[in-house]
Image (cartoon, rainbow, N blue to C red; front, top):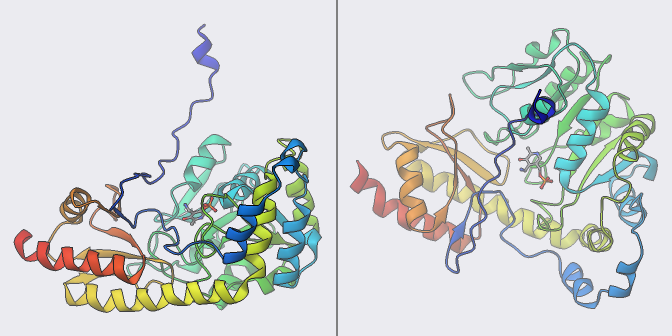
Length: 353
Ligand code: PMP
């Protein structure tokens, strides 16, 4: 008997790299290229450090209340966490306890199978169609729960409201989690459905559309009873997860709706322009509704483009995995950053052919 026999062995999630080079163009982790709202910056500069002496509010009440008001739900329907990864991990632990497998797409956020492994949850993946869309009929088989991002990552494709509702309706005896990390870039949220379906949890984040990946803020909205179960597990794990600065600065981000709409609108505009230019350069891609484009070149292998970009300090995401090894996931940056990416590709691709 060795101590190692009793270790919980897991295969961890591999996050995108976070290089810090002065002139790099970082398009690899779907961060927002614009700064957080001015109110966030203002408050960060005036923050009373004396308050750090105390534990933060364990319910993150200021932020929970601001989110409830913004989304038109009761505070009891809101659960906040340290990034949506924290909310999702708690939700896996709370809701996915069946001996039946949970279901999620084969090409999706690569943390789902990691949490399933960590919490010993059986899972089964459902193959996306040839067009990269979810096939709702796949989610009609017996299961222990359902989770998918909408828009999906890394494809960027959005399933329409009725398709999502069809999946929820077919799964009233389990919890369905819709991970809307990328919904603010022109997508349609199924948040209104939480009033109709008590088995639905909608999860969103401040990391992309609210430019606060470094603060680590995510939230889930659902029926009051569902949220109570989630809180019971969270308070059995760690009461004070979200720190005081995140709670206070998060409120400022929610308050400035004009800034939020302006920056997300700008990203959508840049995305649509980049789609046209990538197509002209010989790329094809699913029609993204997220803040990234999942693109493959007709002749030059993605791995080769990835390496060349990296050498030029332009970082995008690449996975050497079945079905997606010829695609690059390119985050939408500022207009100037995308200009530089395009300039590089226009120069590099003819040489690589
Ligand atoms: N869901 C999806 C689909 C994502 O791509 C990400 C970002 N890696 C997350 C959730 C988690 O984001 P965060 O923890 O920063 O809120």
